[in-house]
Image (cartoon, rainbow, N blue to C red):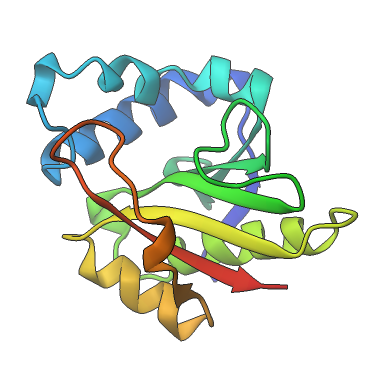
Length: 166
């Protein structure tokens, strides 16, 4: 692996926020494009880091090439995880770093983190139907579809859910 997974540093908040926002914009994941209010949430890494755990993938020169938000069930950043579960969100990989295993390494870090949480039985996530390459990673890692938990954060934007039993 030619990159490292670690906690985000305060001096990287803006860089990761920009990467997260641009990824969602460029991948067509924001219903209202640049006018989508969720863009501000995606860019606010400082808040996410205060209220949850934010991990980054960093190249040998410490350039942020990916990131993910990890939250325990029942906390502010858990969309679908309930107590006894953990969740990861906002998984992004810089376009130039795709195909290097960055996304899978970030997911593995979340799996490892969930496994050490006392009483955590599963790791869950929500994903857009269009994120086919991400779905392949999840399925290869043992995540199973949980269609009964699929949901719409805003009307007309259906998210698929997956869970990994720990």
